[in-house]
Image 1 (cartoon, rainbow, N blue to C red):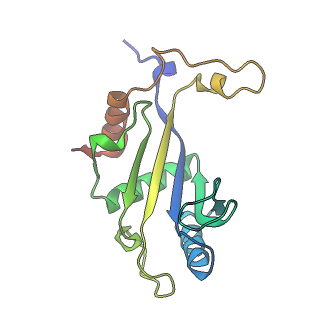
Image 2: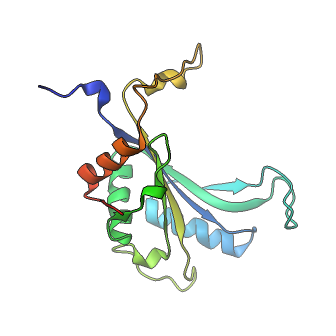
Length: 169
């Protein structure tokens, strides 16, 4: 029996995120490091609300970049190696997406320590998709994805095991 192509899971996007806390040379270094890791444009993220820690609305606090396609697959393989190909069940959400952190960027294979940047970590968020998920993002008459077509936590874990040889703890 052949597998239904509409049930095939793939990576929609990978988002790399670093929180700096405030603007300045620290944030510039983080942006430079993200550009070096991903070879893509990096966007500065701003606060949405007034912070109780003294930051006002609209202040720069971090940097992020989004990768899609083959570039996303390659970077997931690389970052999983930095995590020793291990993921926890708690890193998967109920919609089948997953997030994990890299404690230090020097753990990533092929990346050398840069004294200008120092030691820092980053967050990796992987969004999974199936054919037909476009209906929830249409401009005219967007619809909900059917409950049987959604990606479950277990399906996402199985996808990561099969595609990237990840060990689920």
